[in-house]
Length: 156
Image (cartoon, rainbow, N blue to C red; front, top):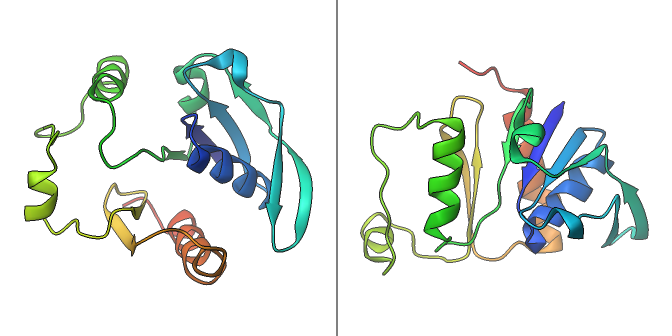
């Protein structure tokens, strides 16, 4: 599967390495393109190894073009300019877009276990929510199977 991973944080690097190792064609973009490595060192229960990415991209559009899955790990209180730039460049498919700089709406909507990780299906709906940090155990036993299930599900 063609996967675009967007971002320069630890979650993006981990996702790019893991999805590549699982056999997916990963195109990796981050704002500071000069800092993008061609390989990522993955360290987990199986040991440490170098993972060679399919492609690192200087332009976000290059990464997402033709992608079947766009993976964008982002902090709970991400920078508003990231969201505006993404929507301005690729269009806004949403009915409404808002910001929650103080986290009040997040609390009212039940976001209570920061960090939280969401797996979004091909249809744009949340198919799984992990409350709390990603650990080696829940990554292997829960999150990876949920991601694989989302990747295999039809887009409708």
